[in-house]
Image (tube, rainbow, N blue to C red; front, side, top):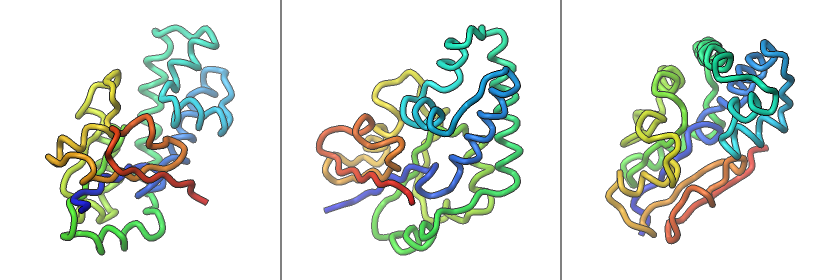
Length: 185
């Protein structure tokens, strides 16, 4: 019997990926680098290599990259403060499941960004816990989406993870845990 659902935040519950792309694209433009949407998906959403990989490919050193990261994070914060749409149907699904199964959110978002995103969504009212970037080490293997089984004190197959196909479930989940992945239209 399913006892917990672990939701990927970005792209599953809230529509933040376009805003993050915009912040990253604008950041790289300031460094003279063009970022296509396809490259963004590959490096930032699938491989989690992002700015570091692109900087290395273009001979941008860490000294120039750190201020770019700071600018990107500030720009992303600005975009988030303008409002983040909840994915169609997400609020209704969470409300329907609330109280019937434990639910958590997992994200690579910084806590500051996560809090801005959800300041007005109402989604956290249905969620039992959230894991954000600061709750795990970036180099940690497995990734943050594999940690919630421990957080819920549930062993496979009693928990399920839901992620978008851009990130995919396979590299993030332990054998035996149910996982669903889908491509947003």
